[in-house]
Image (cartoon, rainbow, N blue to C red; front, side, top):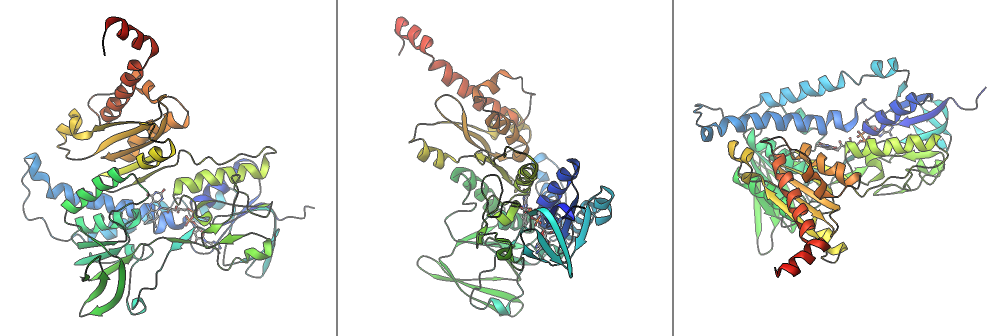
Length: 475
Ligand SMILES: Cc1cc2nc3c(=O)[nH]c(=O)nc-3n(C[C@H](O)[C@H](O)[C@H](O)COP(=O)(O)OP(=O)(O)OC[C@H]3O[C@@H](n4cnc5c(N)ncnc54)[C@H](O)[C@@H]3O)c2cc1C
C-alpha cells in the first residue's frame, strides 16, 4: 500500500490548476484538485472571460455609433446598454459549463471543495480529512489589491470581483489604476454609456508596456471621451448625494472627481493566506511564493505556478508554468521556465500586444545598438478599407536581425503578434518573415513591411553588397 493518497494534489482549480491536472492525468498520475470556491478560477468568473465578453459587447455598440463613417446612417442609438452585463454573465456560465466538477471527475480527476491548510510537506488537511500526497502544486491565484485610501471603509467600491455583477451601466465610473484591468474596464463602460475618469499614478497608462504603444492606446481612449487624471495622492473618498467623491492632489492643485461608481484596480496580491505554508517549509513574501526556474518552491516536493508566484499574471503564463511544474514532478532532468519571450495583450480597441522587450528596455540592455522597424496600419490597404486611424507594428531587433521585442497596436493585435512570437521563440531572424507570402489585404501587411525593412537593412549591410557599392563609387 502506498503511503500517499495521491501522486499530485493541486491546490486551486483555476487556469494553472486545470492545466496541471489535465497534463498530470495524461501522464497517468492520481490527481486531486482542492478548490476553495468555484472551479474555473478568476479567468472564468472575474477575469479574462467576463472582461472580454463585456469588451465585445461594447465594441458592437461602438460600431453602431461610428457606422456613419462607413456611410451607414443609424438613428436613435440608446445612451446606455445594461443588457451587455447580462450577456457577460451568460458567457461566464457558458464557459463554466465546460469546467464543472462533474466534467473534471469524468476525466478521472478527483475534486474536493474547502479551505484547507498544510500540516507538513506531504500532508494537507481539508474539512478534517488528512490528505497525503507525494507532490503538491499550489495554484491559488491572486486577489485584487486594496489600498486603504482615507474614507474607503464607507464606500461600496468595485473590483474585478464584483463589477460584472452590476445590473446597470452606471452614469459615471471612476477607475483608480491604469493597468490592463482598469483600462479594459474603462473602455468597456465608456462605450456602454458611462462617463469614465481614470485616475492614474504616472503620466501614462500601461506602465509595463512600450511607451509609444501605450500612448497610442491612451490617445484613442481619450478620443472616445475617457478622462485621464494623474494623481500624486488620493487624499479622501466620501459619499456625496448619490455619488462618490474622490479628492485628489495633482502636481500643483487639488481636484475632485465625482462618480456614481468607483473601481479599484491598483494591483494584485497573491493568495497565500490560510494555507500554513510555513508548516510545509514553503517560503513566500508579499509578492508571492518563492519558486526557482523549475517552479519548485523551497520545499522539494512542492511546486507553485500562476499568479500566486507573483511573476507574469496571465492565464497563459499560469498554463506555461503549470506544464513545467507537472513535468518536473516526473522528469529526472528538470525543465526550466524561460521568460525571455513572454507575450501579453491588453484587449482594448486598439489592442496592444507585446512580446519580449520594449524599445526602452532594448535600448538600455543593448546600449542603443538596436534596429527598430515600424509600419502603421493606416498605411496598409486593409487599414484604408477599414478606415483605421491608429495602430502600428513595431519590431525591435539586434544588429543580426534577431527579434528582441515587438509591439503591435491595432485591431486583432493579440492574434497578429503570434507570427512574430513564433520567430522570436524559435530564434529565427526577423528578415526571414519577408520570404513568406502574405495574404493581401490583411493587417499582417504591417508585419510584412517591417520584415521588408529588416531584410533590406540586412542586404545593405552585407559585406559583398558594401564591397560592390565601394567599387561602383556609391555612398
Ligand atoms: C479583469 C481581469 C481580466 C483579465 N484578463 C486576462 C486576459 O485577457 N488574458 C490573460 O492571460 N489573463 C488575464 N487576466 C489574468 C488571469 O485571470 C490570471 O492570470 C489567471 O487567472 C491566473 O491563473 P491562476 O491559476 O494562477 O489563478 P486563478 O485562475 O485565479 O485560480 C486560482 C484558484 O485557486 C482558488 N483558491 C484560492 N485560494 C485557495 C485555497 N486556499 N485553497 C483552495 N483553493 C484556493 C481560487 O478560488 C481559484 O479558483 C485577467 C485578470 C483580471 C482580473
